[in-house]
Image (cartoon, rainbow, N blue to C red):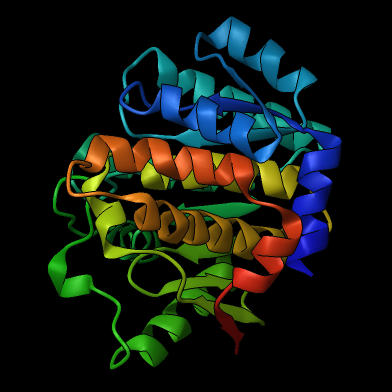
Length: 273
């Protein structure tokens, strides 16, 4: 299943528009190139809407909001909806500030998303209307564990049904659900949290996978999550005692470039509930 989904990305090379944060924009572009997609970044209102029209999918990331880019997010999201193109939302830091929270909630009201991907605290903020995060990281109190997994699954499935979007909650255990079926994914390494931007890269990657597989949003999102985690595992195996998080970031992108659809199929570690 995941082999075919990733193969579609490689073959179709979807053009993905990213309105993303300037901390990780270069890494997002590179991971898209590595997976076989084509990235383009535009956040000026007039430019962004026009670029959205020529792209197959849109990735909206609220990591570094400002009054110039927020209107571009809303307008581009609506343009993509009108064209029937999938849109991914990464609500970075929702719950950390009023602007982030209100912007994310406003986007949910006005734009139809194919996938909403974030950490558990960000997704809880959207699902409950308010919440807290540790900066742009998940609050330790929200951490998904084997003990609270069933409760988190129930929350995620309910939120997916309410938004009619695939919900992807990433952390030590990744959860991807459309409200009916749920993938519980255990790929990845804890060291990935020491790199700024692995979540942003994953949201861009998710947009590429869903754009290449528009009728399989759930499976495409799950495949993207597995691919990113698997690359984190492969990259970690390359680490020496001289390497740190900067090398690890590059190794992850290298691993994505080298990953084959067959290797993703073999290496994906998940169960469906």
